Length: 295
View: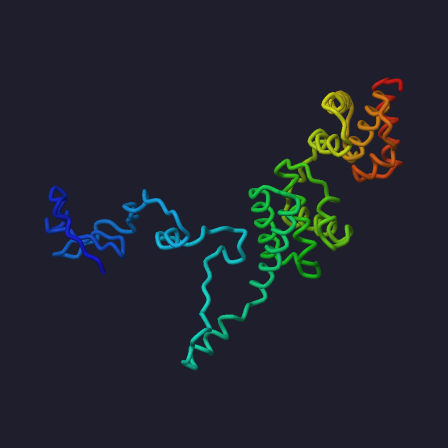
């Protein structure tokens, strides 16, 4: 252990006995040599923080911390394992064997976090959304809400709620496209989350979905502004309670295409948005009638 006397700091002797203070660098402590009083502890050494590393070996040799703690890791990144290689002691071999075994709780979280990160990566979801979803899943797991329900279904439900809560324009169908779980299963898990955890369901703003649909339809900026304007006028004058925001988007998009003589069919818009053609026509008729638009 490296010990260094604080001779250059004689103005700050031990507050108890005025003795000499020494620094224990490996422990990150400053203690009195005479009475043993710990004056400072957990001191961070920043003496090498300004040194640059030009190679991978230099970077590894100068690292003094491990990977950051993250809730997206099954064990927060804090668990350790016993290296099985070059073990001759039978007791250590037995310990390594038991160490490699995993409880159901840990296995459940491993499956859930792996699936959540996979879907989040495919949908390019930000980290804070994935963290919100995994916290929700952990709470559901603690409340034993996964009994009789699939892990992947609950993960999809947590991700969908996190997207709605964080105002990320992702629909349930987009999440379903990234998993093999049925829509019925995911919706049942979603309703269970809302009911058992007393969550308030945030409403989806249809305007947040418009830019992506406009880009997929290869329409210009003026068409986007016109669609947003129609939705704003409609939602400010009439109640949209009970109406699917995707249906309203589909109706407004089709209305703008008709007004601008764009040859885009109802089927194409309905398939893109994720609604039926019947829903599209219903919202289209409602918009033209209430806003008194002739097309």
